[in-house]
Amino acid sequence: MRYYPTPSLSMKVKYLMIRKAVALLFILSPLLACSTMEFPGVYRVQIEQGNIVTEEMVSQLEPGLSASQVEFILGTPLLRDSFTPDRWDYLHMVRKPDDTLEKQRLTVFFAEGVLSHYESTIVSTERSQPAPAGEPLEESEPLLEQQETEQL
Image (cartoon, rainbow, N blue to C red; front, side):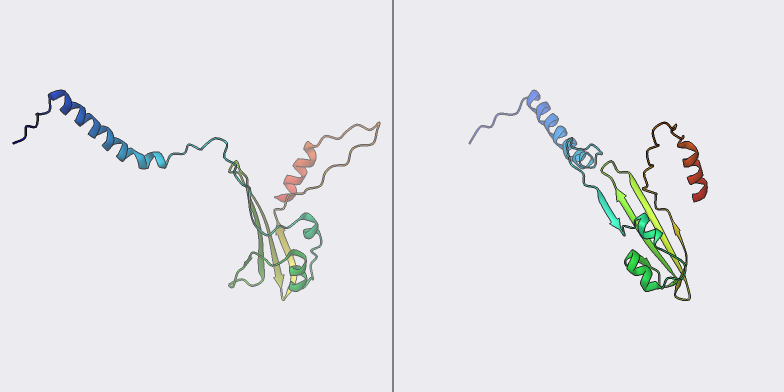
C-alpha cells in the first residue's frame, strides 16, 4: 500500500484561494471584453454613405425639369419610395473618426413627371472673397444669422 500524505491546512487554504481567483477571472472575463476602453493609437476610418450632392448640382435644378434630367444631374436617388413615387431622397452621411455624424439631405418633389420643388440641407461651401485694400472687413455674424433665418 502506498502512503499519501494528507494535505496541511495551509495547503488547503492556498488551494481554495487559487480556485476562487480562477473562478473570479472566469466570471469577469466577458465583462472585460465589453469594456469601452480603446487601444491607443488605433486608426479609425472615415465612413461615407449615400449620394454625394454638391451645391453646384443643386444650383442646376430648376422647376420644370423632367425626372430623367434630374436623375442625370443628381444621379440615382438613394431612396425611391414606392408609396410616394413623386418624391426622391438623396442622403449623404459621413461618420468621422471621432464618432461625429454629418448628415445632408436633398428631397426632390415631382408633379406630373416634372420637378416642382426641392428641399435641401446642403451646407454652402462658398468662401468669402478677401476685401480690397483700404476697405474695412465686414463682420460675418450678420451673414450667419441671415443664412440661419433663410434655412428656417
